[in-house]
Image 1: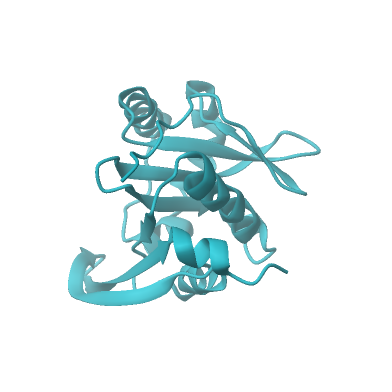
Image 2: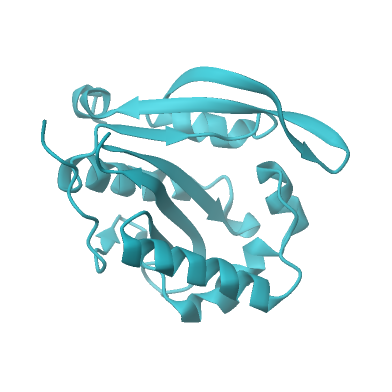
Length: 191
């Protein structure tokens, strides 16, 4: 069995409307717009960041993970303007088992335009072809139906439900488990 390749520190991914580039510390200001949005963060069962330093800490953690080879985070930017509108990442990268978890966030003003699906297609292609991963996992909360639709549209299969796994704002939330195998990605119908 071949090992998963090491994620490149400078891999940039292009889509028709987006450029995904490695996150840098200077992205914290732009990313704070979605990291501090209570309407956006509630779908993840997280409290919004209350100050820019919290967001900088999150960015620094991502940069450290990239340095250690345990994660890679891309800033999602509009190709025509370079504006940062979101982020997506592979984290908990496990080279011995050739798997990683997928995470993603987008400014609310860009929701429901197909941009996240577009970005994640590029990340999945990179994950399976360049990194040679065998499995990608994603774990949205049960209330996050839009995220689940994105995953299903990309070919992910629902594999489980962890009941009352997160407690947020006085409510229990189930966590949904989705997985996508390299063979499923390769064999999917291409549109």
